[in-house]
Amino acid sequence: MATIEPSIEGFTELEVFALGTTLLLEALLGLLLNAITMLSFYKIKELQTPSNLLVVSLAVSDSGICLNAFVAAFSSFLRYWPYGTEGCQTHGFQGFLASLASINACAAIAWDRYHLSCSRSRLQWKSTVIVLSIIWGFAAFWAAMPLLGWGEYDYEPLRTCCTLDYSKGDRKFVSFFIPVAVCEFVFPLFILATSYQSCANKFKKTGQTKFNTGLPFKILIICWGPYSLLCMYAAFENVTVLSPKLRMLPVVLAKTSPIANAFVYALGNPDYRGGIWSFLTGQKMEPIETDGKVK
Image 1 (cartoon, rainbow, N blue to C red):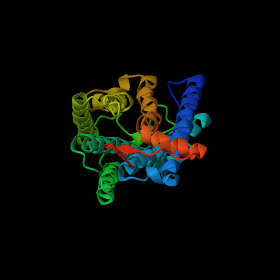
Image 2: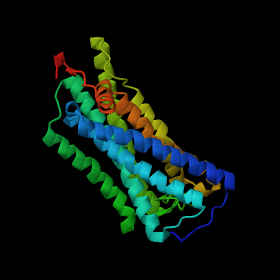
Image 3: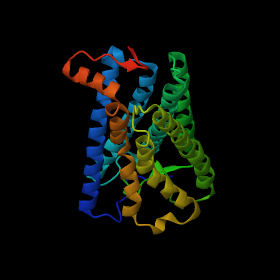
């Protein structure tokens, strides 16, 4: 289990301050962008569709990642973890839950976009509730397991924030990490790859490109790929031979995902962007065209 108030080793004062500042900026910008996404959905009636509710779910989970980063930034400025063992477990659970729900939401949006673009079938409110239950239910299940003894939460290398403990690389970690990686990273990646490839093929045939089909997959790989590889390495090798600074880089990179997702799924969506503009300026939103019809 985690110990109370560990010291920071392997980092200079300047490096701790720089990492804390980076985490703080990621948290504040991510919270701002995702708050705008959620408030726009709440205020602008034209945005209130089942498909956009998936985007809002993504914004909620990404806001959770930002709050997790904010706590880590605050602790970094203090130079120690002030919340004790129970606080570490709570911080690890909350961050892992938000991260898994975020990845799941990206897969759900890809699945929805495939049906919108290729089968022209639209998500209904009842189906959306079921999808959201799956997104958060699976995330909650896996995030709760370390609290029940399968896996473990402990301090990150900076030792001012907590996450899934991969440093031991023991049988308990390996038995937990492999199914989590398959269910919560490999499978969502498969959904993204197949869904967006089908959309790309459809757009190529029709000559109408509705959105960038390659960007969501690349963003997920860039933001979460390094952290997944780090955990995978820890499952087979002694990860502590890597410097604490090197092991912190994937953590910092993963916490940029809320910013990237806001640009890809909200600001990068012409219809949703129109709703955000309407929310910020008070101007009437332009009618949304779907399949040649004005909504």
